[in-house]
Length: 239
Image (cartoon, rainbow, N blue to C red; front, side, top):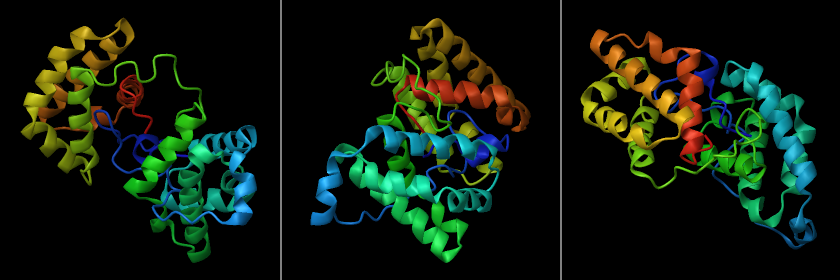
């Protein structure tokens, strides 16, 4: 129930990350305590739990704003209930946190309550547990195979920097000030499998052109978004 970012849907995705995460949006950071009455459900029902998560993921692909995502959550309260009640013990706390925030946002009718970094992490954990990405599609067989490599370490640094940006000018400023990371990213991509190597090379070429022209337009292209997401998955980042 996360990962399909508003920025990606609106064509403003930048190297390895979208600017504004929405899809964890049933996401929150406060985790309700388990009670004795919930213990029996701790074994969970993985099929029901994941079907609900995937249902929201897929429906969210047509959402282009936080207000729209809130409306979607209002219409999928049966799915929220399944995520809340059917989560197996290993994912229970993250699922409870997601639903708690979704329910509060619905009660307050406040879409601004459905975006947080803690919630994004919880949402990514739920999707990974269900072996899907934020679009509800199965994770690729190579998910996480690059995790811990020098390439993915640099990719993560770029990801963190662009994720902290609040708009295109800030993304451009970060990339321009950290061209050493872009250069290292370019050097390390030689170690990648063929598919990811081509994707990473495209990202490097596009990023360098954007920096040179001080024009972020190409960074928002659909190819940039899909290649960025695939590199993230290769590095074990389901966000």
